[in-house]
Length: 373
Image (cartoon, rainbow, N blue to C red; front, side, top):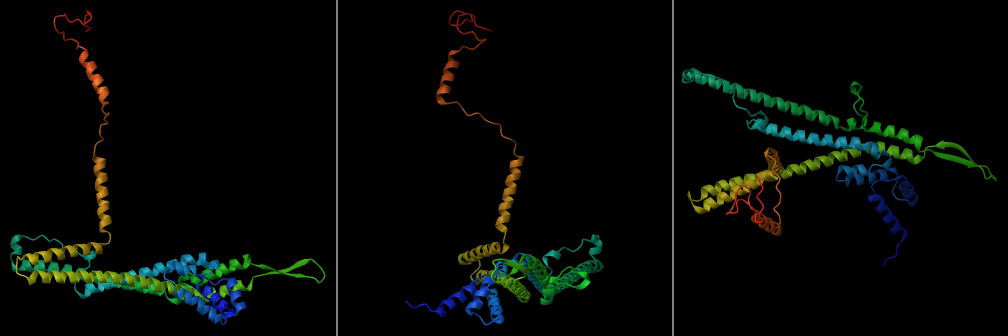
């Protein structure tokens, strides 16, 4: 077993500090005493290296020092949301540009040509055909203009969100038009003002030969000011890391969607080739076509995303409506036991019916008494 030396212990300590979520004040003192690092630049590089290893917004927030974590959580989450919305706006713009280049209309603009009433005799003439064509052309031009308006609006939103995510805006906020947005720097300054009043330590002195200790003044610990300066330097790096994480997640999801679309396109091409390669009406062609149709249906369901949930919800709604429309069932009494039914049948058979005299007893009972009416 190798012997543990002082250098080995220091390397282990440095490794523990590098994988810790934050570099606290005690870590700074321990690192300085052990000689770990090469000053402020080494500590800053170590903090940024930990941030580069974060793969989610929560991990980035966990790297913020505890004194500033709760204050910066909301603005950092807002930056992540704004970055995600910027990616969504870029995807919408790309779809609109594809529609514009291919001379197609997006689904939100698809509508039929307005119905204009003409007489049959007029439509049968050349002037009627030209009138109908002019209406259709005007409607197509209107849809094209609306598509261009949507493209311009998407460009405007992207420019606005890109401006809100610039380093200057994230750090200092929006100073125009008397805006209250002070940026991440404002949150740190406000928090430091609170820490200066709540984290003071006494500076005491004692006279020689006396046991009495006198408090001279109250001072803010130097480590509080050092962490404050570190946050001012590192806060923009937190924001940049969150933006990169959101962009990577969106790129990954978009790659999955593109892969599914490629599979669907390949299946369509294979199905069309399989349908025309064999002779018409052959069994192999029919089997290939049915197999491709099943695969296409399966892939379409995967692309739809929430088709199963919608189907289950519709089933529940139909079941609920049918339950509400069904009248309340009449409560039934369970039949008596076999012994009770037999006893009841025997008693009923022995008892003669009233108003129906039997035999020649003149309507009397077996005991000679007249039957009650």
